[in-house]
Image (tube, rainbow, N blue to C red; front, side):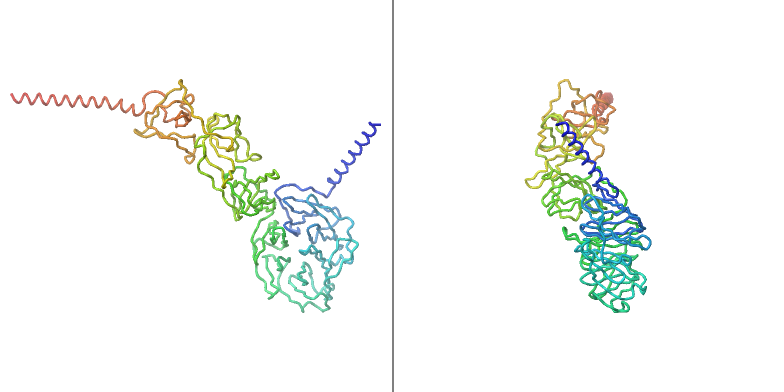
Length: 581
């Protein structure tokens, strides 16, 4: 009996597993990847946005860039292509055509996928007459037919209501190209034959649109941000002021006849975003404020390479909540560094800082970018170590890391023994009573100078060394007579890394730390209980130093000179004595 129950349970578990696998691997659904978002658009791609997310089409696929993830759905229906798309915080609407027939499809999305609403059938809408769709900032959807605007309900049991109704001969062909519209404060702004019409009557029966405000142009798209109407043509982005019917230029960068424009309000951060499809088939992102467009970032199909070697390692503190982005180009929001939190500046590029941030509460580590203009403060480090210039590990096999954190990007360099001599280089940072807890140190490993980071709690003052009685004694020498020889804390390749310990006179006797190798650039010696390094060219393992050699040469010459002088004096005295007789 037990075997039967176990077998049935096993079969049920397997069946459930296959069901879940079928759901998430079904064709048309793509799970999100936590990657730096790469966007690839085509000439016929369409663009829409909501909050700080945007959606676009490419071929028969709909893509959504959301939370540093790229979701996608491939439409399986037979159709020629998409005509327009719109989105709110939960749904995406797509207008498509197949020959002379048009379709309106609805999709719902969340953090992991996009799924089609298969039973959605819009009512009271003549789809063949629909030219454009639109979603306002309240999340309401609208469809523009050639002679009216209908609000759209995604609930198939509710009727769609007419919002604007006209009888202007649009269907009869009085106007050639009726497309792209917005509804703002009960006013319909529509692009018809490239011109902007401002229609401020809900229902009217005129032979044409001459009764309404018209601004001539070659506009190809329209949007609204912070209550202002934004227009786009092949040359730039413009703002329409309803108070005086004027149009002002916002930007003229990187657009063409395939461009789109859309806007979104990010309520969580109180920011108005504007997106444009550029002439490079990329998505340019702007912040719209006070009648200006400030360039914010670009999404394209270029792979952005993050730094792997960090040239700046400084501690900073966030004085307000600071947004963490995926890259300087693909500005997907990765999260927030809370006010009062500490993070490390690793590298800088353009107007952005690449940082390491660890959330101790959630035990979560993130690498990302913040703007240089963000409200952050440098936590200056003490230039001195409380233990002095020389340290040693406090514990056996103490880890030294490449950077002052543990984890990806900061591999362990060494498990250091207790008696290992470390040279203090820098303190990463401190802020009042807060200590970041890392020292940058230098040490010699296999004859090479290595720099790394060790936790401050794992170091102690360096224990003084005594030179062994059997250590070989050598003398320091110089190529220039009377020149002092410099001892260094560490061997170095670049002069800026030199750390001087002392300067000793020519002929000073020192003890070798290891076997002398005249082919090596550096020689390790004992000096005042520490290991110091001197250039091998300044070490004389045997023979005379230059000073001693100078004395050897000079003294005989001096003796000879004195002897000659004495001889000359004696001879002179004898001659004088002879003359006296």
